[in-house]
Length: 510
Image (cartoon, rainbow, N blue to C red; front, side):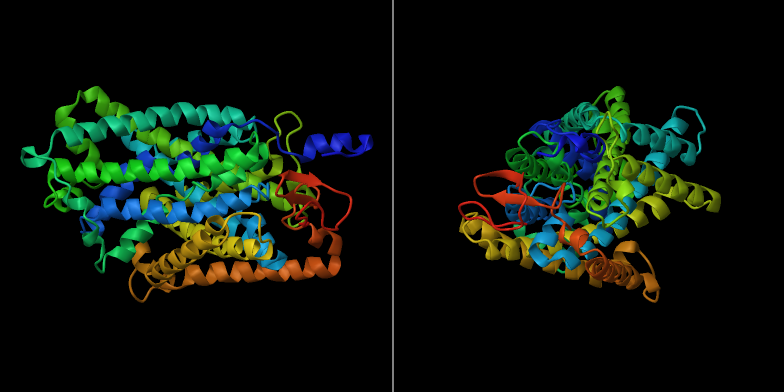
């Protein structure tokens, strides 16, 4: 981006580090957010146990298909808009600046709650593992150690975090595949059954809750787009990484859910899950592998949660950075570390907020696994689902307004299918949200959380109206990138121009 020499110091402290991440690193961030080992050990066995349906493998594969269709238009838009604001930026371009700011006000608490909730899981799991080794350590102490490491890494070079995630995820995926092979190699009754892969089992009244819970297991894959400004050749890198993150997470979860039914037998998988819950996988593979491999699995489960913590921290910090850079938040949030290019105040803010919430829960003496992990990640996941639904419609509107940028499948067909499918999933989620939170029928939480998300979105719209009246130039830059004047063209990546007039062969200006 060309600027006057006098502005050079400003560039150093108000831009993310460029060209730091290749496709593998961006994939690691996306897959880390989805935390496959955490989903496999925790969510899959819980769905078997709670829903009592054997179609869990199909539910994960169908969910991966739905999200793959969503990513078609999503990543097509990423080729024309490079912005760390991701959903916020896309919704701003597709549905207007006011709607975009409303989406940003949903994104901030949603991703923040997802990240903070994972500290509860990490603290609880780490405390249990240490207890098994003979050490009594409170969950808050364990969570505090993870918090400190994430807080430091959040301020360092993003590719350093990418390398940490690479090591953790390669080990995590390796042990998942080993466990799956062991379970498939030891089938119940001596023969491998494919009964739980039959699609017919999904056409029951349990389909809705299963799909909702499965979608929650994928939340985090969209972190790939948040890193677009730091990626090498973002038009290609982000698209490939997003598709790979969804496919990899979907295949791993679907394969593992099926492998569990193979070793137990389809008729016994639900009962086994109800008996062992989150220890189900370890109970199944334990008799067939050396004890050290089970111990490694417990440790990698912990590192899986840590990887997700790091990925969500990066996403929250970059959302805050994008909003600060464009004037939606105070300008201080739009600054980056002068050496590492990491979002400075965004990272610090999320770290302090997480610390405050963890201290409050510790002082209150609440159980972390349910009240922090289950509640906060579920509430945050609903917010992300709202964003995905809005983004799917924004993608469709964007390509209707700018015809000819992509083919019909990417610009129209896939976005329409994605919007309809996500509308169904969102509707089922909102209607049954109280059941997902496991509250009583007369609890206000049956309806309070969706209403609160709508309320913060309205506050965002009102704030956008205030900006339009008081700071029209700042308002014009909402969702538009580093200097408010990004131009996307079919021929190349966004460029800066000094005019707000359309440019290019099929020129248009954002």
